[in-house]
Length: 419
Picture 1 (cartoon, rainbow, N blue to C red):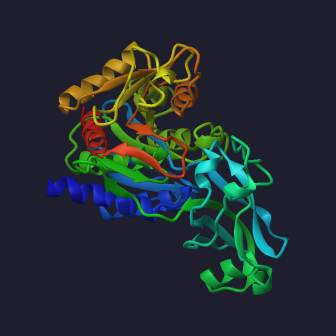
Picture 2: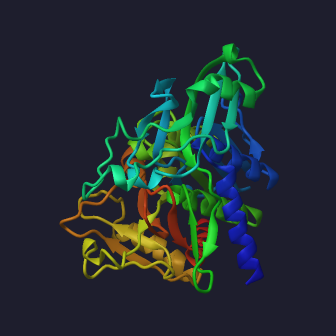
């Protein structure tokens, strides 16, 4: 029990260290470096030596472990570092009836009302005029306040995505500007700030709760549950790996908005890593494609646990439940990449690790979301399966997962990597 508590406390700390996709990428890279991985500069010669390597591009992080004798393809774990929320607009300051507010744009598909009445911080990257890139976490700074019920007697509250979600930061009389707030945190002049990418984050720390302490509530668990489990599995597998495949961990940014970016899954980043690694191994184009034909990918993204108050939203024969193990995600319309071959690959890994598994298929009347899985399968032609830990309140400012499911996911991913 003590070991489990320590591991989950590490996950809670990982979430705290990863308030934005940029922080998550750097946190993963730092932890892998501590485990012996070599940090790679994309502008330099690609490493040809066996061992672990890691690189960061924006809010994405790629890691790969090359064995002494490569005889197969790539074993890939894919996830994403970003989460829904609100992005600060380029011209952030505006004033209304004595209040100093922050202009924000909806990012992805947050459950908007869950972001009200929370102390929010802002996190992400700031680029200075000299080209220096800095990561920033403001701490609790802003709040999107609800309207008192006495002033809003309508039965349902449907917040306007432009008017009602702009957070308060100060009183006009305080004379506060957002640029100066950032400058003070970074210890630079406000004039030195060129641009930024900053997202709202719930400032409350994750917490284990419930009878038996079986549940964990925190923000950004879609999809830091997958990023953290992937990282842990990669470290464990690389420590004593004797197989012939190259092990790869890929955590992309911008999944919540379609993945179409320089470091999203629809971009070239994973293919860049695979191509340059194959080339470093002496493979030509034909050899690389032969490696692809021997490769596979586990796309790990949070899955939907059945909700006791809305069970009708699920397919009646598929009710994945928190605490019952990782979920295999299946969709006839290819919103998930799973097929019979890749499902067998994943569920065999679960069995080797003595990890229970469940399956999710959507209700025909309730269309499901999608993941990086179909994008990876389409771009690279690699067998891919979509999986994830069961989660409730997905896209809320504060989500819910099962403690044991998180631990099982690490074990199953490690079993997949080591083969």
